[in-house]
Image 1 (cartoon, helix red, strand yellow):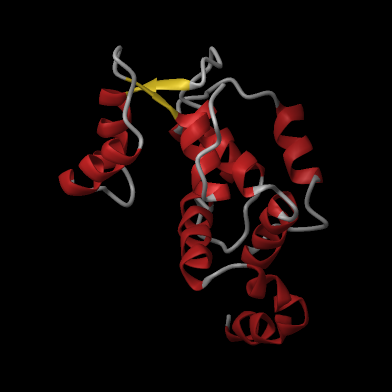
Image 2: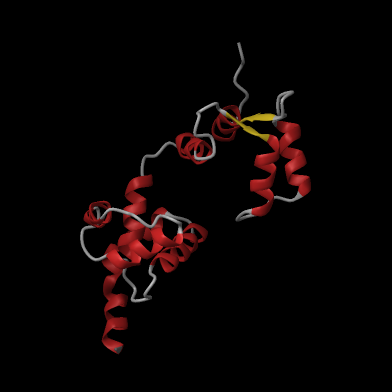
Length: 168
């Protein structure tokens, strides 16, 4: 199957999508793609999506939902197409909105706050883990309220705008 590898090299025309992301981001997308490409054929198809949902605990995904996801792609989903699709979804996305949406996943009631203990647990045990010192620095800069809640909306505003907004 050597011809397949040669074809991948000539894909350079659409590789400008790679310039939209930093190398570390591309590596993270590659890891996600590899996880989703359950049968390791270099493409994400219906069965790969169904298996990915099953691995995430969603067993009764409707066929229409999977078909709709696949229809978003201009053709078979190889890594370049996968990256392009994410690039289009993220293009023009306000960094503040993107970060807020990540926090909102853990705040389904939309309170705008998360428990300090929960934030500490997430940031010290998941992905790029924070050290105890980093957590301490964050809570000095962004102290939780008396009930132990962190105002993540204010935190995100300061991360993205760089200055404290005056609270009325």
